[in-house]
Image 1 (tube, rainbow, N blue to C red):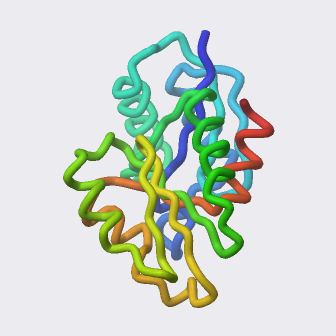
Image 2: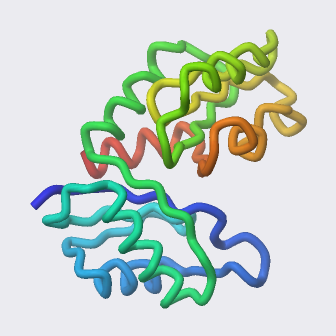
Length: 174
């Protein structure tokens, strides 16, 4: 058995995409995974499985989530080691402002990473490490150009969490 952490994209936004923690856990168990736990109501789930293929795990979860919620739920899965590395990498930036992490479904190309990182400014910095984009934002973070939507336009499907959540999950589940 291996433990994975899944991040659900675009749930609990507006009236039509509600997907409570209990329903998420039910769907994960229905997909055949065990030792299921959720953390806050933003689509974070820990589970064990005998599957080893990330693509197969994500596909099984997405099928179960759509069956339970009634809408597509893109899902991004990491191993415990990968999540720990993302949390650890954040410390290397020493950023005192707002720090968000966009978690990517697929590894971006070197050209796409270079293009994204070149859009950085003094107040908005993007640093890509594997399937994680660290968004280091200044005081006007609520007006930032570097958002998860911008990341998705350049690098594909992503979901965003603030660094506090990433660190809490790494501490709790890794």
